Image 1: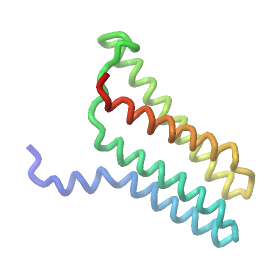
Image 2 (image 1 turned 60 degrees about the vertical axis):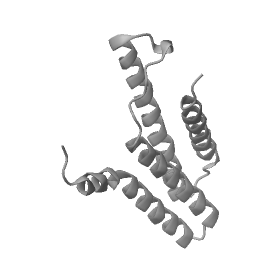
Image 3 (image 1 turned 90 degrees about the vertical axis):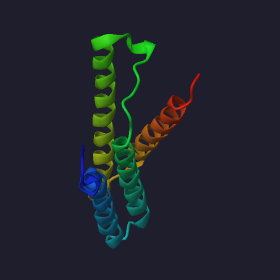
Image 4 (image 1 turned 90 degrees about the horizontal axis):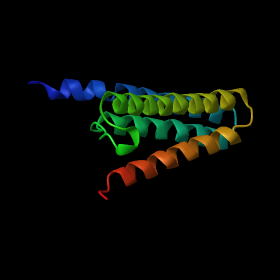
Length: 131
């Protein structure tokens, strides 16, 4: 039994807080360069990613669906799908920030980040409903 839950709860918000702080710094750097639109987009993307990480901290274990089969193979497929999604999310958000700091066009990355965020939101909402 954990006696001091406040210690544990603080550490579980360290990574989302760091991502949000990075978003504020990137937004401030871009705003200082006079690119306020790009600054807001980069800040929104990193804030959305921080929210995603914060939500995943409290997420219960996902149930195994029939689409993945059963047993060890199902857990391996589910873990692989989750890892793939996490890596692609980091790559898209990272590319968006790097391109924004370079002063390049970020349109493609904004659309990919928006598509990924919307897909996750719809899937999370649909997964909570019982059929």
